[in-house]
Amino acid sequence: MSTTTKTIERPDVRDETSTGNDTPKFFHYVKKDRILDSAVNGSFVVALCGDTFPVTKQAKPGSPVCPDCEKAYKALRRK
Image 1 (cartoon, one colour):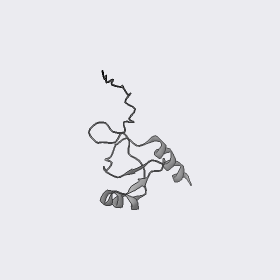
Image 2 (tube, helix red, strand yellow):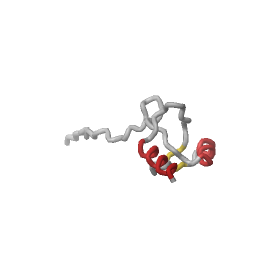
Image 3 (cartoon, helix red, strand yellow):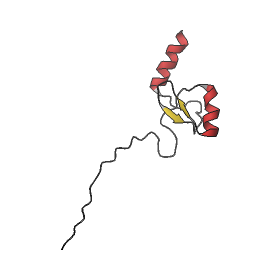
Image 4 (cartoon, helix red, strand yellow):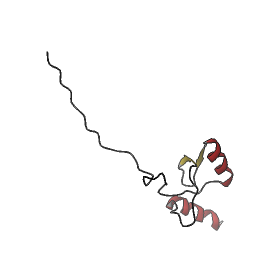
């Protein structure tokens, strides 16, 4: 009786949202009053673009901003 084992190759389909050093590709616009709660308690925030995530990093001046959040923010400012 012979048993064989085969390895199934799976493509890497992970969506890389960070640059490898735990810095997000984009920073999002979220409600100010939700940021501290998320940073302390790990609760999720909802960005203007609809993305949900816990706050782990603070954006520095000049950081790349999510294009969808920026578009939504500018639309809100016109009103």
